[in-house]
Image (cartoon, rainbow, N blue to C red; front, side, top):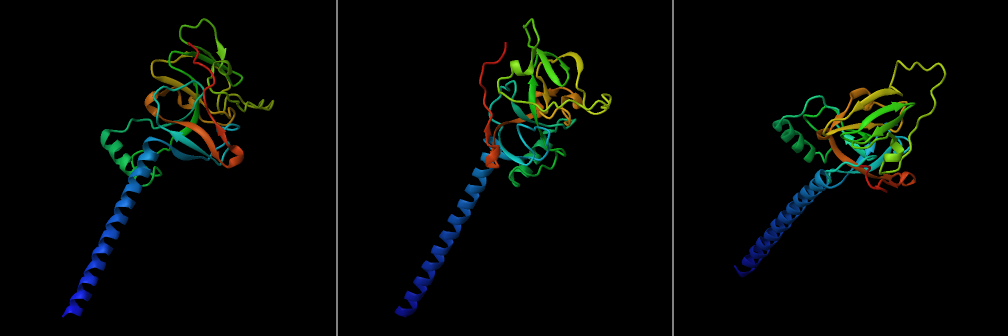
Length: 236
């Protein structure tokens, strides 16, 4: 009996140890899952730029880090913009949140279009016009117009190759347009590849609610490594 009792106690101890190990493993997996989703949802996440719309600053095939943190949008920042025509209901947002949480921000149930990367070229209150693919802006309370490069807080360059002589200016994106003024909470976003890009010239001004994150840096491939940060104060 003593020998059988010892075997039973050892077997029971092994089962208990196994259960504790499984519980710890499950808890660690759940904790990792929650931590990763919190990180990707609220702090920072990698995003692949698939198009040439932001070249030469964000080449096609480049991975960038995007963060939703920070409310004030700076002039010249690259942001993620939603082109959904209708705002999602609370229930749709709830569904979308959990779908993205369980797919590590890859799949959303309610939003059919993925956000696009575009640069904030003008801020609320700006009066703007475009000439030869360069944006000119007169900030609120300013007397003069400035080029986007004079005003931007984050340095960048744009691809504005001269169109061929036979180029039909009536098709594709516009290289020039007349003055307009942005209202409260309205932004004008542009691609850096001005000849081949869908941006505010096509879908119009963008409400702040449509901007879901800001691009911090290119991180892969290493040859494209670049950090985007403000170098001067905002124009008043």
